[in-house]
Image 1 (cartoon, rainbow, N blue to C red):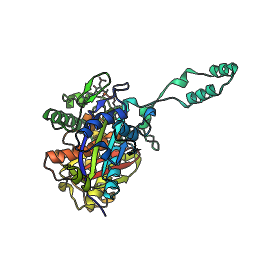
Image 2 (cartoon, rainbow, N blue to C red):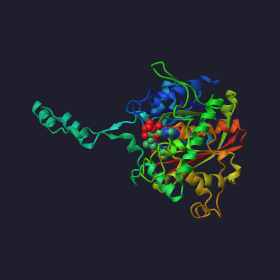
Image 3 (cartoon, rainbow, N blue to C red):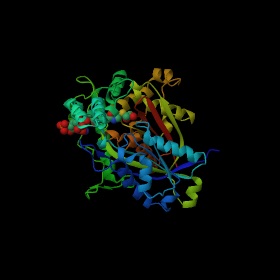
Image 4 (cartoon, protein in one colour):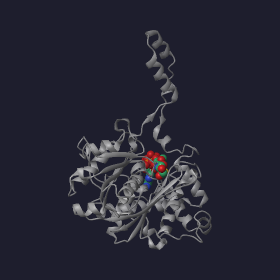
Length: 427
Ligand SMILES: CC(=O)CC(=O)SCCNC(=O)CCNC(=O)[C@H](O)C(C)(C)COP(=O)(O)OP(=O)(O)OC[C@H]1O[C@@H](n2cnc3c(N)ncnc32)[C@H](O)[C@@H]1OP(=O)(O)O
């Protein structure tokens, strides 16, 4: 039997831009910063939560299985099972999907599903030669052996291989994520000005949402050990303009590429939680659902065009529920890159693509920009990769409520050639 699954609350930290050195919070710190006030505003004790699932891409050595570390630090008790999931940028949505399926199937009543990522803490990886040298040094027993090993040391052993750059490069195609966006820009003829205009609008929408107080219950302040308070997403640039963005050079395919620092998602730290509950839990604790999770879908595609993941995941989802493009009131489509979002929109309007790839008779249709990423996205907010999938579901639930919307889809592209999508209905 399939049981209804509700989103009853959720919160995230402000998203903090990685500024070339480790930021004030680790992934678990971030998860605890927003998790604690979220739990404190509930009418039940934390022990009522059956399970914690957390998405995290770059787990740090001191926080193995960050879900469990976060659960214990949040006071959920020794008996609460907690596990971490990782499918690149899909991780924060995968945690919700896992929770959704457990509650739908009746094994659990209340689950905390999150995403946490501190890209500023991405590990520095040393070359293979350095690792071997450290091993030889550890095995050298006598002072003579040690001296001989020391003599083998070469300074270039220590030129680091930047961990994050590695993590954002596809292991099969060897294209980094920005290059996959360039592939799509070329295929769908996305020009630079259109990509930049999309990015400018992302910043304006986030700035407007911040000013209007629309993010008040969703974004909770985080406090560093130094006492400093972080209250808002700090990557936003309300003064963004076509003129300023037009001056930036292509980063991934110079000199002719379309993808720049201005129209890419930013490298950022942040965490987000969504609290899911069964009907039984809603009644038992007197909770007020924000939205209901109707269904979800995952799709796989050629890794070099991973940016089309949202199209391949969300169209079958809509089709399964007989929903056309205009039946979806709001879309949260993770803004990995402006060119990538625009390519998804172009694919949905392309008769041949929809026929050949999606098996439709004609194009799916045009998604109105007024229904898409209404309060900004990863270009203005930043993209803590393991968190973003969680944030878009949380924000979709809140935005549906705020705008009296009925249905929405949150969807994202996933490095390695995957896509994820979740269909929500206002509760
Ligand atoms: C992984 C998955 O599973 C799937 C996915 O989602 S794929 C996406 C994953 N994420 C990524 O790949 C991250 C993509 N982004 C990046 O790699 C980096 O942001 C980047 C390499 C593109 C840029 O990095 P950076 O150089 O550190 O950016 P940043 O310092 O913010 O900006 C560079 C310059 O552009 C300027 N700039 C950026 N945005 C601007 C704006 N809106 N207006 C004006 N100027 C702007 C900055 O001021 C800066 O100029 P200065 O150097 O003169 O200060």
